[in-house]
Amino acid sequence: MENVIEIKSFNFAVRIVNLYKYLTDKKKEYVLSKQLLRSGTSIGANVAEAEQAQSKPDFVSKMNIALKETSETKYWIKLLKATEFLSEKESNSLLADCVELEKLLVSIIKSSKQ
Image (cartoon, one colour):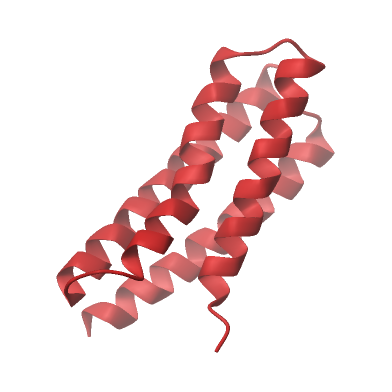
């Protein structure tokens, strides 16, 4: 069975890595983009870790970390847009993916706590 959150968080991480390469190569931006790289790729890493959780509380904990990383990633995207390193179109597309991940994670966390 396909794991939607795993697939979407991995694909999002790929977008973040490509964005990082673009920001460092073309825009010569290294500080904010590094923060974005860390938080944006951490979402999928925590989701992957959750798949190997030792217990339900461990699973929920890892998913909560992924959710926190999603919030942080949204912050960096908004900051990169506000400082004109990202266009409106680029940031809106990334934020839409981030919000989708956020909703999936919230749903998974809620259903796992029941």
